[in-house]
Length: 217
Image 1 (cartoon, rainbow, N blue to C red):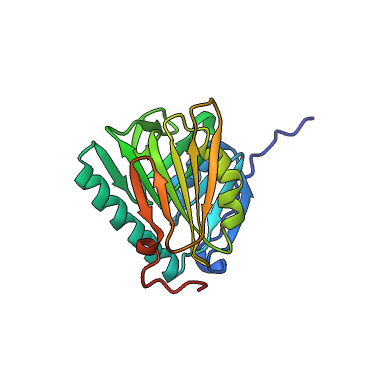
Image 2 (cartoon, rainbow, N blue to C red):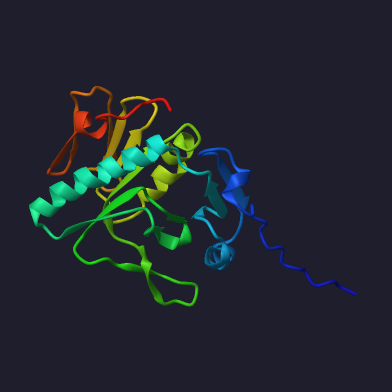
């Protein structure tokens, strides 16, 4: 007599206290399992290529940089009056074909948001498909993930033009910008306080980003 296979629900930590600061944990899961756990897990989880991604809690340096970047982006795009909107990390960024689902530290959308679906196929206003810019603040624990699989997944978003990665250990910013050639991106690294990072029409001075930030923490 054949025994029916019993689905094994991925086991997640009960709290983020089980992880070190900014540690990253990967747990195998399907897209549907991820969506089910998303509704019941009391902390943020993300998804990439059949794995649930869990990150430990951010340091105060990380959050200071995020707050500074949101302020600088909001001031510029509010004054530009171009229909751009600056969003924080609680909005999810959907990668096409159920490849990934991320919480960027900051994202910029031009015009109205295009929403991603829930498991039941309804549009969700907490999941967007059309960011023009995404920003991530790198840490020791997340640097490899952010510069690796996450970066490549972001490049699958048709609307995305710029990916900015800002380091919290040193004065370093990586900017990946889409070129005029299909599927081609140009990556440039800036590592001096006098550098200005170009994001389309927005010129972002690193001296403003890192002002009064204690690095290496």
